[in-house]
Image (cartoon, rainbow, N blue to C red; front, side, top):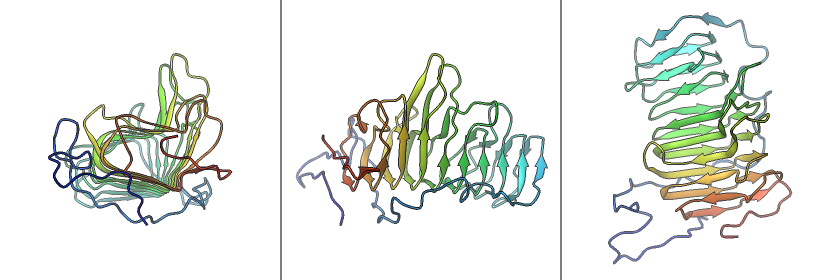
Length: 284
């Protein structure tokens, strides 16, 4: 059963579930049914590039996609892949890239799917992105300030393992950082926002929604393990429209509260708790 915490009068001109603070209409959004449970977490043995995967085909130079729906399967990408076409699929691969990006999605690269990959390089995604069963971490001797970081709409980030992050100087590290977009679902990920000491910076959150590049609306955070050390709030959200937070689990050890919602009231808040069963209650 859906627990709804917001309501609005049918006589109201504006309602926080339908409009933002400036009165702009928020896109309609149907809250999906809960399709996961906080168990069987992603591990290095179950997601990412399998240990017994066949030898990968190296791509050492920068490359542009050349047709819609192009599939890259079993590649070692040490150059940069520009995704210029819709519905490209990358799977069973190791994505390293140059010092900035492994994947760079241009305006035409909607509907990109990345699945079953190890990812140590940067990934710039566009609308319609799906990231599923990937392992995101810093390469040996390298840095990785965030697991997924994006500003995009109609995004599903599901069943990923994010660990082994290493912040560069001045970084504010996040497991997943969303900077703009509508219809963003963060589902059943293991997220460790942990890093060696960061000169001039620190750990910010396991999951962080902050509209730095545009309004964020209609977000779902389901069944994630939220782990943070040296930071205050493992879950931070600033968004409008439907804000659904349910069946997530927290690990003790963070410095502050369990969550911080800025100018945001959840429309659904259900079954959120620490690993030992202690409830994480909205408003407390």
